[in-house]
Length: 453
Image 1 (spheres, rainbow, N blue to C red):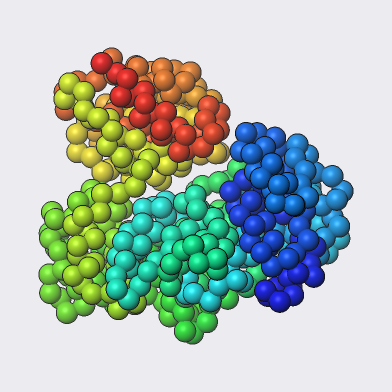
Image 2 (tube, rainbow, N blue to C red):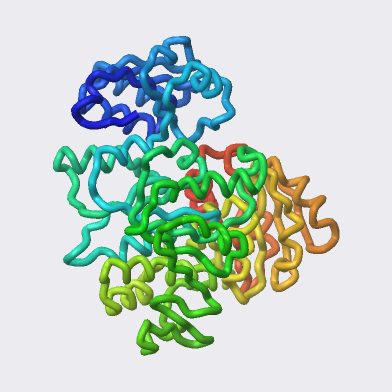
């Protein structure tokens, strides 16, 4: 179904989900006069708040369950939290109701170029890197997507004159890509593929298939930047006619190469000494090269790219330094919701680590951490629903305490910490057993640490 500002007024649109993305999609659709019905199966605080706001705006809504009203529709816009195998989705498909994502819907109301970033790990850090590199006289980037700022809201703010910008930088999860149709990024960045969300996607093939939907509409004028060091991504773009630019920590690409001490530009001149890059970790260096490759395609000067690498400190809840207490340092890595993220976090430090690991398991195999914990993880404190499962996976390989909550885990780590230790909360699990989301978990962790004496 082709949507435009002109014909949307004649459509009956059902929006499933009333949190950030669904709420923003409703406001965008209402701007062009569509008849909107918004439905959410839940009735939590945020849903109730948005329900009242949407009702005041004159829209029809329902919460605490879906009625058959949702099927009286020309089009569905679904929030990323609703999987494609949900019963309501299956019924809508049988009724031949077109279904699109909020990302897809918003993309149809802007002509600005899009840089789309996906991968199992490092997405949020990378979009912030790209955003900083593109903040120049020529480019005014707008950061949106999975980072918490819905694409629909940014498009609406731009249309209303409440926001300035000329290019979108989007973080996209596999959930947001399930119902892509005409979405068309100018530059697509693929960081890595590792097991994640297998509780929702049946297997790795299905997970990769969702990720690759991001480039289904790319053509010979577009670019795909991908991680050559990732074995899965190596052969994933053979059929695409887009311009493909691999990047690597081990090989040079179109613009960059490196050795053990320096990063070089396309003329083999030194761009920056690795010691001058503020953000630690090989994974962050890889993300920097991916970001800089996109920046070079948009003619950003090397001086700006170098300055970003020298000054960029990272993002909240991703290896975020919290506090030093009696010589031991506490780090908040709440965004690490899978095993690959935990591995990257562990390998970012050279000091002894007390690792806080736990939460709600996403069908992860914690034994994959074993080879990496041998390096310098001296103690693990497991917590939450997955606490016992983590203890079983490690057995006697690492000293381990089991606790029932994050608060108890912090107290336990504090007792056993020595000067020079890193206390790293890198949970490797979802947060929903104890918290609203990973941000909530990270904020609560910060408060717990700051309350320690």
